[in-house]
Each structure stands twice: as structure tokens, then as C-alpha cells.
Image (cartoon, rainbow, N blue to C red; front, side):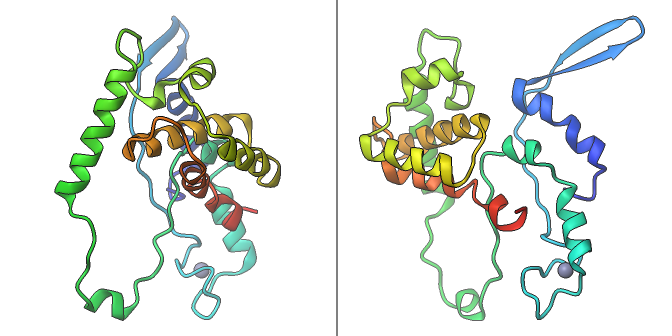
Length: 202
Ligand SMILES: [Zn+2]
């Protein structure tokens, strides 16, 4: 992702938020649908080894400059950030007991069905489509979850946008577990997907 120019990356902000792109030209303003799923990857520094300082050959200025190409407002619009940590020889060479694609597909289809039922008769399709008002209506949070959210809001200094996005991701995690109410652990997982920026960008 940081190999693109900062300007190109920043242009993604509007369609990521609104699902359309507006172009202003001499003869008028044009609006095009641009509702998409963004999947992006990046290294933590130009050489790729940061924060392993035994292997990283970049200067602090190079690392800072590289990460700065991805702005906080753009990061705010990315719901799931996950780190791909190096795999140990042991993990590579031992048989894995991971869930297979077919099983994952079943869980995803179930969560899609739950959302279809929930939003029947509305203009919404998925949790991602929820407006702040819709979040109030459809994202019921347990008292322990609310407590966690309050603490995380202050501690992680999350923006209002990120707060709403955390609730929508937690709604989906709860749907995957067929839980009507959003529980503390669903929020913990959703907040975890947003904590990478605190590790690298601050
Ligand atoms: Zn490096």
C-alpha cells in the first residue's frame, strides 16, 4: 500500500466512507457508484523487518516516513487490521488443525442469513451499511461490553468514526457466533483489529 502516492491513497477515503465517488469537472459534477471491498497489504518499513531491530536495516526516519504515507483518517476507515507475524519452523513443519475453508464458508453464510433476516424490509443489507442511528437500534451491547467500550474509547483515543466501525464489526462477530447481543469478547476482538495503528503509528 505505501508504494502508491499519498494523494492516490487519500482519494480512497470518500468511496470507502460513502460508497460513491464524486468528480468535479468544468462541465459539472459527476457521481459514480464505488462500493467496494478494500484488501491491502504493506510492510512495516522499507526493508520489511521492523520491529525486529536485529534484522531491520532502516533508519528511524525511514520507518517513520514509510508509515506516514498511510494517514490516520485512512486507517480509521479500515475495519480489520491484522499482523502477519513470521511463522516458526515448528509451526510450518507440524500438521495444522485449522478450520477448513468449507467450514468457514458455512459460518459466513449463516452470518449473512442472520443479517438478511434482521434487515428485511429496510434498505440495509449488511451490518456495514448501518448508520449511527441504525447502530443504536441494532447493536445492543451487554453491560460488560459497554464498560469495556467506555474504557477503550478513553484509553485508545478512538475517533467517533472508529467507534461506530468497532460496533459494526462487533455486530458481525456476534452474528458469526449467533449471539443476539454484542458481548464483551466480541468487542474485544473488534477493538483488537484496530490496535495495530497504536503499535506502529504512535
Ligand atoms: Zn526496515
